[in-house]
Each structure stands twice: as C-alpha cells, then as structure tokens.
Image (cartoon, rainbow, N blue to C red; front, top):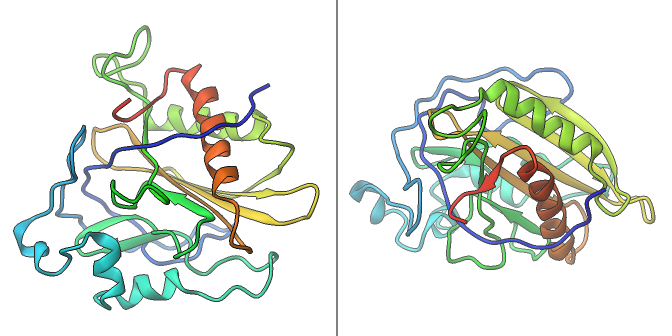
Length: 242
C-alpha cells in the first residue's frame, strides 16, 4: 500500500470545449463551449504567452487575476467558506484570459495546483502524462492509451491507494474531469481534489488539491499527490518534465 511524500514542476497546451466556472456536483453539470486559443509549452522552460496578453498579465496569471481582469476567477479564488462541510464555490474549470484550466490556489499555504506559475514554489506542482515520451509496452507516444482508459486507471488508483487513512468520496466523474473529497478520519476536515484531462494529443492531466478550512496543510496536499503519482507510475504514468 502506498504512502505519501512531496513533488515539483511544468505546464500545458490545449484547445478546449468545457464547462467553466461551475461548481462540480454529483449530477453531470451543463457545459459551455469555449475554444481555447492559447498554447503553453509542453515540455521544459517558462510557459509561453501571446504578446497580446503580456501587457495584461506582466507578473503571470496570479497578477492578472488580482488586477481585477476576471470577475469570474476573483469570485472563485476568494469565496468565503462557512465550515468544512461547505463545498467551495470556486471548484471546476476556470477561464484565465484565453486559457481554460483548473483554479488557482487561494493566498494560503494549504493548496497546490498545476495552474499556478512555475516560479510559485508554494503553490505550483507539475502535471502528469499518461503517455510519456519514453513509454514502453502498451503505452507511450508511439502506442498511446486512450483517455478513457487513463481515467479508469486514475479512478482505480484514487479508490485503492491509502493516503494516511483519509476517506475517499468521488463526487463528480466526467470524461475529462474528476472531483474527489478526502476526509480526515481524525478531525473530519475535508480536502478537495480535482483532476482535469487536457484536450488534444498531449495526454496531460492537470490537478488541484486544497484543504477546505485552515491555513496549514500544504505538505499533506503534496504528500497525497506524490502517493497517487507513485501508484500511477506503476501503470506507466509520469510527471511532466521529470
């Protein structure tokens, strides 16, 4: 049975039709068509940004959001939480300029997300690929597995990998999105974990994990992600850029 430890870096490239700014729920949410026009570097280095966006977001995506350019994102970043039983309204996919991805972290050290800037050591964590370039056997760039199969592998790992005794509750499962609650058996606090399969042929999986209430918890989030990644590695997955 797997145990937990930490991880770091890289980002993504896509065109996307998705539901945006909606809170996940047990029923399948309605989707809004939105084509993403921005492409981020797939491997290594800083994410590329189109020139038209550089004057809007000189300090990266977080500055763009905090400068008030997206009310949709601001609302999701700073939603007040009543207690650990209240699901955050900011879950789901977000629109940052032309890019659609999972949400940024709130300004607290209890969250990590692949949507953060590479230089944000407190919140950034690298995405995964289920078809790594050097993949062997029945997967990889030359013989890729389907997104459907990759989702089944992810769900299997989530359901059967122990992360420090946390109880697992899959709230929403779509073709390209998975939302899971992890409940602490000791104090009953809940962490919200989301996974998003980026569209296109990159075989990329983005994710975000955050503690619902409290300032601390970043190490727990990183440990959980490391645990899941190690289990997925046994199936052929890999961290992007590592």
